[in-house]
Amino acid sequence: VQLQASGGGLVQPGGSLRLSCAASGRTFRNYVVGWFRQAPGKEREFVAAIKWNSRATYFADSVKGRFTISRDDAKNTAYLQMNGLKPEDTAVYYCAADQHLVTSSVRIADSYDYWGQGTLVTVSS
Image (cartoon, rainbow, N blue to C red):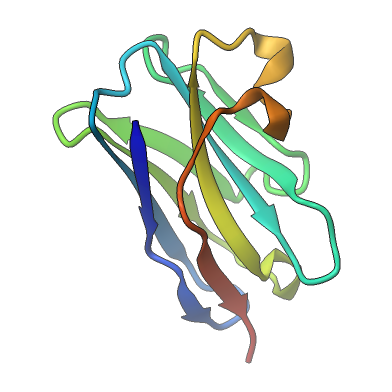
């Protein structure tokens, strides 16, 4: 499966952005779609994930209550809605996907075999 991430940009603190992760080649059915981010000089970290079939969602503590993750089956696209953005959310955001991940694996980047290119989110006044 090929992943295409989009939607990044420059936003002021407190603002919102919606990132998209579109799949081509096959559907997201049976997949887990995750979002990770990497800030300059830092390691890649988990942000959020959704199990396509069950719609179960998972969030990093740092974004819980501000970010939501959803899916559109018809468009074969996952979305990361980011509200209340803070300067510390500035990073390159990546979407990733893999099949049949167990819950204990969804937060681990190495669990995912398929990755999209990153999209840059900059939160600054």
